[in-house]
Length: 79
Image (cartoon, rainbow, N blue to C red; front, side, top):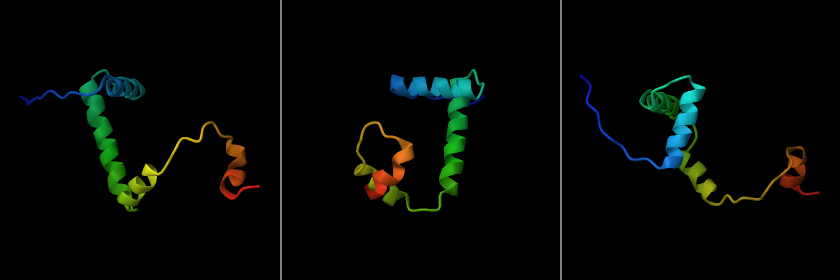
């Protein structure tokens, strides 16, 4: 018999987990969480860059509002 524990997560995270469970056609939130961890672990293992640099750059990110992807050169390089 497996051992179990209880974890507390914000309701918004539970909703995301429910949505993920539906996407992978899984009725059990436990199995959906297990699959999400498996996927995240595999992705983290395949990442070759320096995660600290990525996280540091995200600290400086800010919301610039709605943008138009067709104007990416203009956003990056100006007129």
